[in-house]
Amino acid sequence: MSSTEQIQTLSSADLALARAFPKNFVWGAATAAYQIEGATQEDGREPSIWDMFAAIPGKVHQGDNGAIANNHYHLMQEDVELMSRLGLGGYRFSIAWPRIIPQGRGAVNAAGLDFYDRLVDTLLTKGITPFATLYHWDLPLALHQEGGWTNRDTAYAYADYAEIVARRLGDRVAGWMTLNEPWCSAYLGYGIGIHAPGEQDLQQAIDAGHHLLLAHGLALPRLRANSAPNASVGISLNFTPIYPADERAETLRDAERADLFVNRWFIEPLARGQYPGGLFAALEVEPPPVQAGDLELIGAPIDFLGVNNYTRDVVRGGTTPARADESIKVGPVPGACYTEMGWEIYPQALTDLLIRLHREYGMQALYIMENGAAFKDSWDGGDQVHDPRRVAYMQEYIGALASALEQGAPVRGYFVWSLMDNFEWAEGYAKRFGIVYVDYQTQRRIIKDSGLWYSALLEAWRANTVL
Image 1 (cartoon, rainbow, N blue to C red):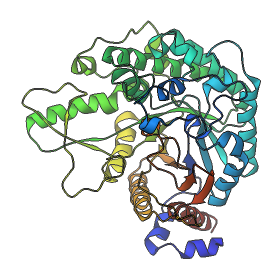
Image 2: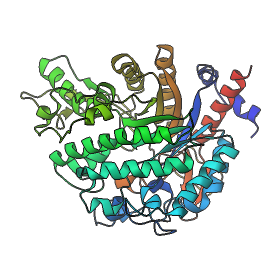
Image 3: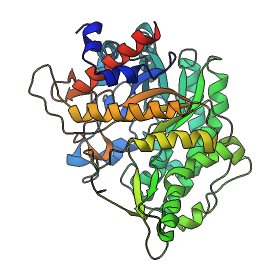
Image 4: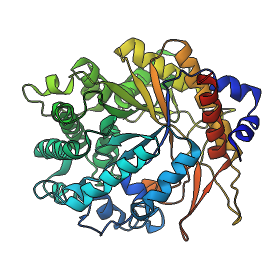
């Protein structure tokens, strides 16, 4: 299909949506190393906590793992060509720490650095801007065996790793994210154990969360010292806006406590240099082991905030205050639609969130680094995959993004989650988020209707901005 034909397939509303975004806006797609790369035992890579976790019976759907995943490690050239066909302006990927420093500290694996060096160069030859995440949950197993993120030393090992990567790639990577969703690493990994490493201790989660933030703070100056002057350094946080189900005092109280835990835990140390008041009491835990100077490091200015948002939570208050992580969630919300993850489709939450981050926390540059939806996609073996619900989801959420821009939110880019179907952590291969379908048996990629729609939107945006 030609570019002109693509644009002609868009509705008048879609064309108007394309015109709502400025010329320098970055349109991209996102992935993560363990979810797509495979080759987990090749070229010097050693195990991560996710290799360990996926091998434990019952932890991952049907015993799935990332050993092969999308075989991106070997199909990288073809995948970048696919990004180019879609017309992406940016690609957010993550770097696997166990490929770079297999034991977490010490000897550097040249083959691992070489792979990402080739990836960055291949992206640039296609005119695609690289955005790299240094930690997307795949902690080297050797570090876990020393306490993982509950061990303060891991933060220092991470900073060394970040510097090594930046020395190799920093002249070409436009945007660095130190961490992806440290809330998930801390709470899902250490608090309730549904993600690697599978610990179930809320105090460990709080301590791990602090060391993750410390790792970010320690890495910032090292990344800046080893990157091009125009490179930006930030972090990606997950946010789930909390809405009260009613106006009762109990509901407002429990909604506020849920917001403390879900949204404010990580943004306030970053934006204000302190943990939000009442957080640890609301979780019934001790404060983390903060040492002198930690919060100053953590609160150092960042160049942008990556925002990951998929849904919202509606909270109803109980007769007694709920522990902040045990609020009563309303579900299903009457009349609402849900994705295969059980997440409500509520695009207004994205608008509200972006405005809040700008007005309440003073964020001057925001990127949507993850937004997307899992639906049951079927493929008949041909050249098409129809996914009308994902197309509608993207239309609505990008529309919500346009509304936030109109109201002054400083949004600089949008990266759909995800480029391709992939290993979806504890859900294994059961959930498909991609705008590109992957047949895991043959590794064939088929652009879904949502990918074609997104490509057409980007083509219309480009046509408008060059006028």
